[in-house]
Image (cartoon, rainbow, N blue to C red; front, side, top):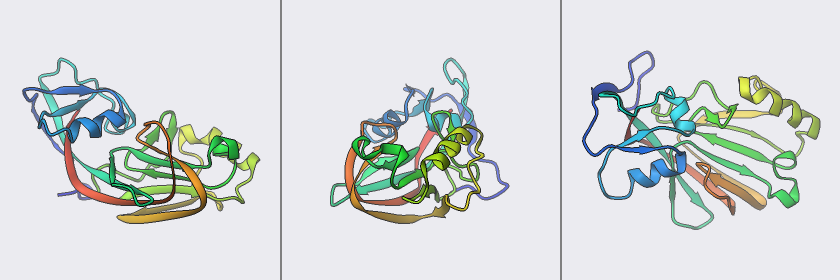
Length: 203
């Protein structure tokens, strides 16, 4: 079951046999879904920071944590999974992060040094989004970027935030999409569905 407000998350357990240590978000989902069934412990990445950032190497007792995954469909392609985030922006030749729409869909709280959302949780059955459009001007983007490490970019009248179980975005032109920090791909339509309790990690 997804976490209830005010209730403890996960359980302390003995470190399981065959544990694999994964240090980046893209590698987490790949390891979780490779069919081996071997448990996964986090040593790095934005999801790792969200769950506390503890180094699990050599620890006899770990936190066993259920997490949600994001099912991401780009245009008419096969669905992919994400554990931390899906980032959408214009390609670099069209201005990248500095021009046009930007959408950050979050299961984790962080993207690198940026603290994108504070109210979300990787096991609450929902995803959080933070987005802005063409009318968010260059100076405002610069100010927002400076405030992102401290989660001080919101509230802002031109930054839209939402919490959802399922959502989709369709853009006028192809966008650059980055899933869990993996190399970017392009798509014009992005659909995201939250899969509650889809995996278990150790931290």
